[in-house]
Image 1 (cartoon, rainbow, N blue to C red):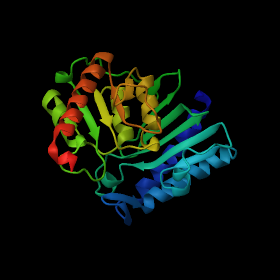
Image 2 (cartoon, rainbow, N blue to C red):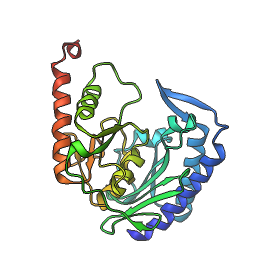
Image 3 (spheres, rainbow, N blue to C red):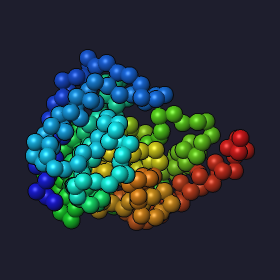
Image 4 (tube, rainbow, N blue to C red):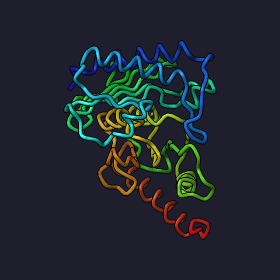
Length: 274
């Protein structure tokens, strides 16, 4: 599905222009506790949808800021193609002026992710991949790191917007923190996966993301040679995307084992039984 990548990149770059234009003068509101949506999110998604509809009016669209579409994410599709869009992954960073956010656009064909682009507007970095064709960063081929040891690995993690004290998310974070070389919580799932793909991170996990957060980044990491499973080590289900991604199979096994230890410790905590 390489033929769809130019359109995907064009839509992502146009959305990036929208985000840059709104930066520093945005108004925001809360979707839920600690969970923001801005005028920029909505305007960027509208731009993406306009570009995609003009090229393929018969394709379905699923965007994070389209609540009706989000609610029907599992509904039967009228087309074998569906674009999965996060117009601003890293909204909290964006609102605070932290330059770690991205536009994420992926294309599904009969439920399988076949191409995707993640664009970082502040760095002007465009990560792209098509199934079976490899992954690139601004046209240059990507490859994951060769890290096989958690003790030598830089790992990233994503948390939910509101994390209860003593939750499994916290105990997993602590267990990985004690084992790995460095641990980061950066705020954009899409970029985290791309950074695994290009070797800036050696691994990443998240248990509270949505399909649109990871669809494009997941394909980019895979096509760059990465390993991706669910938190349990089984094939990832995008309907329940509890994702673990690493550079190598050996590192994947170590990270999965450490995350399981954190989960088990949380279950043993009497506070979790209340």
